[in-house]
Image 1 (cartoon, one colour):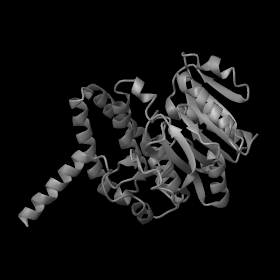
Image 2 (cartoon, one colour):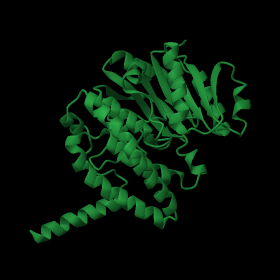
Image 3 (cartoon, one colour):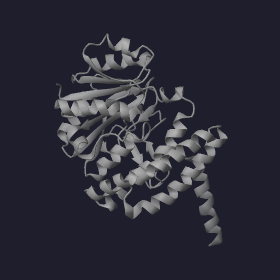
Image 4 (cartoon, one colour):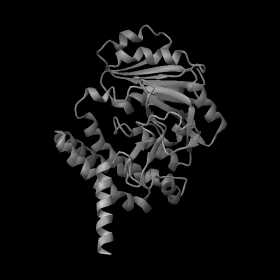
Length: 336
């Protein structure tokens, strides 16, 4: 077994899967490749027959990103790999992508995750250079949509790693666990990164590792999918991971943002999907109470440290929230 495995979750991704696999076969650091197929019906399995070097795990149903990743991660752990990467089926990697991430973790034993510079498929925009988490309970990918591709060229620690193209240390996963399958899709990578930070590990951004991603290629096929998953998963992310000392300070801000997102979904004709997601997420909060107690009881860093690595501002694209916040502060100044 190779030092590093790469796990690719796939659901009806035959149109992009070949390019993905071909890019991984050309890696200067040769990985063992595992595709977890989530019940595809588009010819993906027939395509995979042309890649005998790729190990395939087959599901009869779509288990989402988290459910598609975890069997592959567990296979890598059981095989004795030192590192295992998550890689989207609609992404392609520069030939040194994996080597750069492996070398970064080799040099930094305190780092549990290494994430890359993830660009749009045409290479003209940034998709992610790691994830931030704000005191509003809202995560966001650093640099998304920006066109200055050299802006984030310094290797640095960052709050979280994109599940689209990141490398995880197996010993980290053995300690904090795999992706939370209740998330299904969206924010499960931020959840794992948050648990990583709470456990005292670091996340490092490696700009010399580059990959290219067709943003939202899978989720765009399903109307209302992103709205449902966002409404369901954002409360779980906050409730599971934010330390008790700061839960209220994050919670009231998050509640305001969540309500505004819910109302905006109605204006886009997705009110029912938002309602379904919110109801499902509320139900899951009861299930997550036990997980929250375990995560908070076993954390190895101070609450103040977690607060210090959060972004104390809104995400750049939260325009409506910014307007509301600015209006509130303007009103307060007038009263004073």
